Length: 256
Image (tube, rainbow, N blue to C red; front, side, top):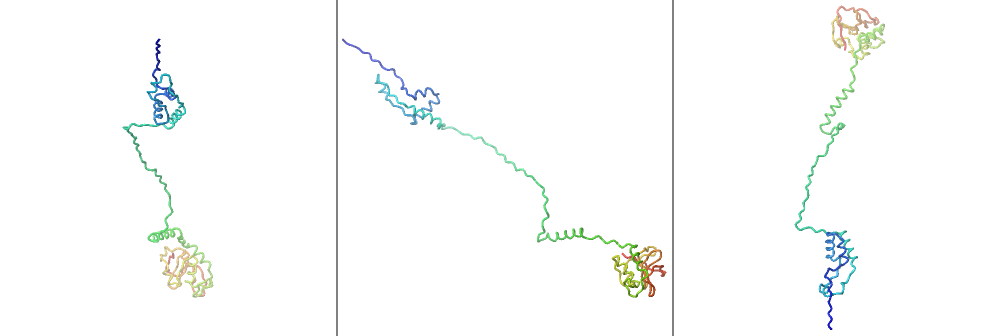
């Protein structure tokens, strides 16, 4: 009796590993990245020869737990992704235009003190300016001319003083000594002699004569008090007094 036995063959299929299941759950891009990591040696797979797989009917392929390696590969892929650029890639950089603007200048007017004079040509100019300023600020105003009334009033104080030849003090006067003393009190200097006093001022006519002018004729001089009168030390033995001019044509001299 012959007995025939029909052999059953396992349907051909791809080997399944935990990495295969992980790849199926990932998208296409993730699977390609995982394959890249695996081909780099981070994931170890079991190489089974196609001949052994075809010849073994009932023996299952050995299963290896590579979950730890797969997790490491995924972590490496996420933390250190690899970027592959095509060889013919081109790069372009946008050109930026830089515009330089001049800084804002603020002008402040500052009044500076005058520079000190140098040792060269500036010193004469500075000295001249200083002298001019000093003359303007320090020069005293001219003393006011003595009034006629002041001269006449002061002369009248000496009425009664005795005549003394060569006398120049209130103890005794001669004619020119008296006029010199009175005008000196008003700050006006006269020569000592009567002949010299005739040229000490400006001669005026009798119509122009004013009180305080000198009255002169040869050998005598006095002070005009107005209205044809004068005050003078006239002659020895006669005290100084005020009265009419005895000379018919006296000369009047304006002093100052």
